[in-house]
Image 1 (spheres, rainbow over the protein chains, first blue to last red):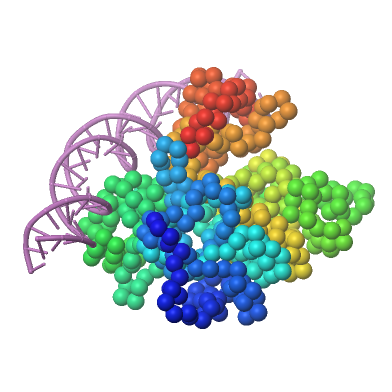
Image 2: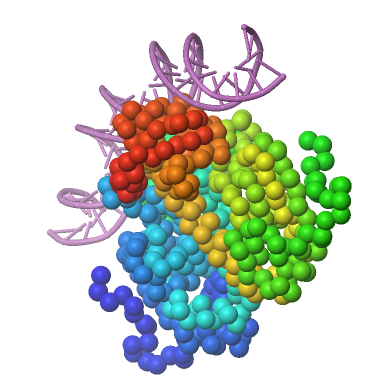
Length: 237
Length: 237
DNA sequence: CGGCAGGTTGATTCGCGTCAAAATCCGTGG
DNA sequence: CCACGGATTTTGACGCGAATCAACCTGCCG
């Protein structure tokens, strides 16, 4: 809640932050830039930290900044006046925050856990695009894959059963080395992403567990036991 | 079903088809091209006609061609193995068909009424993009607005009531001069677009009519009587 | 005047949402 | 290490609203 744009260079003076050392450079839109361009880019950006639940951008606010997500995860939320909530996507390290915006953000972006973002001005980024066809191509690429995902999600929300929705969701998440899946979001988030209630999500998890499809070592950890069966539910689509 | 790539120059020899005379040039992605570029473009395209219900591209087919829609309308359909259907969008004159495709089309495009399309090869178009930053910017622009629309639709499918869905849908359609709205799609199409059944769509239309919100002079014509009330239902989102 | 596709209306069912309570998880402090 | 407390999740009971199933209507074609 207090000033969360903290730098760690409060004590000693570290070397200037360089995009070239960025952990997610290759995964982010910056991956297409030359060293020369990266330097230009670096001078126009700075890091921003957020804690769990904090709002990075608000629905309806003028879109002044764009971001690359460096660490953590975000949820993109659309809120209706009466409180109904729909999550239209989650962002992970390397993802770009700023697609599908015109003058204002049509959704809020909120931090899930502690996050680090790379912030830059929309204005200067747009200007930068004029000189970088590669970057524009990269953005087009990303917009297209977001659009593809969104279309899959429309099918999910319009026509799939709760079980199919949850199975689809789980199989989209990345596995760790030990085969477990870490859920960075709450059940409520999952419900609002899948167009269900929290109770239905919980019940579906329980049923999957009872059927031996998965186990839940902790709230945030899922072990998929019989991937083929879950996959079969998804392929039914 | 027979060869539907008909030219009208079967009798007399008309002047070569020129993009510069295209009715929808300014509305389509071609609007950003210079006369010079238009000529190059023209030589790589040809018109293609389709009748009601015909398939322009099939879900799962290799994406070889892109299209601009010149006349008529298309529905973009995702079909599940068990027959469940979700319409992820409608295209109107000037719209581009080819966003959100990788190697294959992830949806089918089907003609609503008689349509005219401008067809060109994905390969050559992609090559053309290399030399036309304006065109790439235009495509990015369009991908972004499609994405915005898709996100609105996710909210609709995940969280809105049938009445809100239909009201939202109707108010997005263009009015004619006399204030009427022409529905180019069937009730089933509307249902599959809004994530409902045909019966629920029909009942909701009937209720709106009973409440004096609209009248239905014919199956395909809607007269909105009290726009503010419909708008209020939508704003509730 | 059929015939038929598309659309409407009615009766019934059932799955998910709602409301309520219990259980679990997890951080905190004794 | 355990006891406590709040948040989160799970489970249970119930009701409603949209899907389903079925019949009927309407407009339009030959």
